[in-house]
Image 1 (cartoon, rainbow, N blue to C red):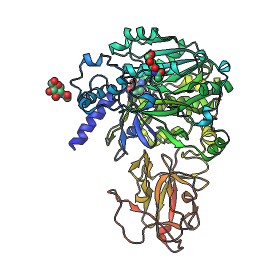
Image 2 (image 1 turned 90 degrees about the vertical axis):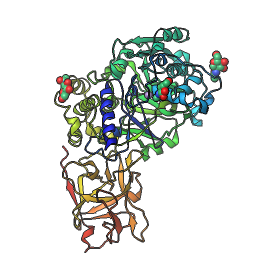
Image 3 (image 1 turned 180 degrees about the vertical axis):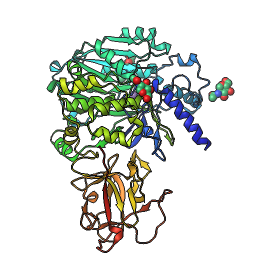
Image 4 (image 1 turned 30 degrees about the horizontal axis):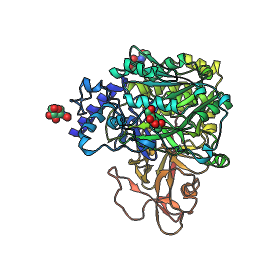
Length: 609
Ligand SMILES: *[C@@H]1O[C@H](CO)[C@@H](O)[C@H](O)[C@H]1NC(C)=O
Ligand SMILES: *[C@@H]1O[C@H](CO)[C@@H](O)[C@H](O)[C@H]1NC(C)=O
Ligand SMILES: *[C@@H]1O[C@H](CO)[C@@H](O)[C@H](O)[C@H]1NC(C)=O
Ligand SMILES: [Mn+2]
């Protein structure tokens, strides 16, 4: 209980800090990482409503400003905060290797870690021009680009109290690994940082570089969206390339981005985002074969590429592939097209949801959003902590998400607001006329239905072609429920039935797609082994389009038949202990039996719009 109170305090503080900081996670390599600062877009489980916050693996990322009560930083003085401790060791971190701080220095290391929530001591040891491995596939290394044909670009980097070494390493990696002729300039937008080393001494340093680098400073904190707009306004390159302030670009990162825009000016293109480890600064290659999407809470998620894209890629793995949503931190866009498309929604505050807004708007209004697999940029992902906490969600983010839903999601906004009433309360006083005019009058954009059908056919939203609602077992009168435990941010575990909950309760809401997948939020599916003998367990796990996840509902007999085994979804034959404290009963597959009442299921439609 004490723990809860403490966590609640933290959470309240966290919300108070939203103005200066961000909440987010990022999931890749099945590791959850956070993004505490100016990371535009990685929303997380932590932002679920209090109602269903129990047992959710929560990841909190925050920019902690100078002081936060729960961090033991009382000894981090202004003097330390304002000191630039960059002191490179020429071999530290070379070729993207990990930097190991010797044990005798670990007390100091831990203390400094709190400042930026990454290993500042390690960062300060790595030269600004550190070498990195070339992580591209061989097909990418073999590709050449006509640099003279590529459009020019301005690289725009927004920062707030960034460490000097991470910021400057970002700048150096851009300069050292971009063809000089296409790199017009680098624009640093300082969103009201307090650190002294980011002031005159930064300007002195960048004036020495052989690429124009300028700093724009905001008199007060304006947030990521406004800061990017400010940078974009001053850009002289043909393409805007946005980067976070703690990235490292690898060899050949820029050409594929610019080439994609050369081919089609209406492209919005992201690199593959690799991982810079927050403790060691090791450069870790990440998966290429993921695309961005979102869950029912509109939180950004990575999902495996659909099979049709994977098979297209077999001919040419260097080709950019579609992504329904971009992660939002790192991307390139033609400058004129950016403005033609409506830039950013200026009424969105500080941070959050702007990547969804840009992605929906892009796809629905004539752009294509792509990931260029030959472009790899490392991003420093900060560590996550598993918290369980109660509480609501931040004003900023909810207000932004409410705008996204109201302007772009048509009838799916009803669904979103129904299952997230805590966001719906921010809908009443949004003025969205300008954005609606942009959508319907200026750009003649397509519908959200078109977007779901054509751009993200593997989505797991309710839709005209499918059942949406509760799946009730007739004999027990209990409802199919996805597990409350999460692995890799997705519910995972044994499929159970539990007492039916009357409200729109996400874990008990399912869709049954026309091709027979019984899916729920976060793209998880009802799954059972294919073999025909013996009683077998039924699970909820990541959807994978395999036969073992296909089901058919026989209306007449009300049975749910597993396609691969021909067996029926059933209650256990003998009384089993509930698998969870909430009393879930684990399900089984059993030979179908006309007389068995425990094999009968009612699909109860729920009105979602
Ligand atoms: C802060 O410094 C004092 C004295 O220098 C020391 O006793 C104390 O343990 C330090 N606190 C932390 C959290 O490091
Ligand atoms: C980085 O810069 C230093 C000093 O200019 C130089 O000696 C070193 O070779 C450079 N390292 C790389 C990897 O280019
Ligand atoms: C909208 O309502 C919220 C709370 O309901 C309030 O905090 C916010 O200031 C309001 N915004 C405007 C523009 O009126
Ligand atoms: Mn970032």
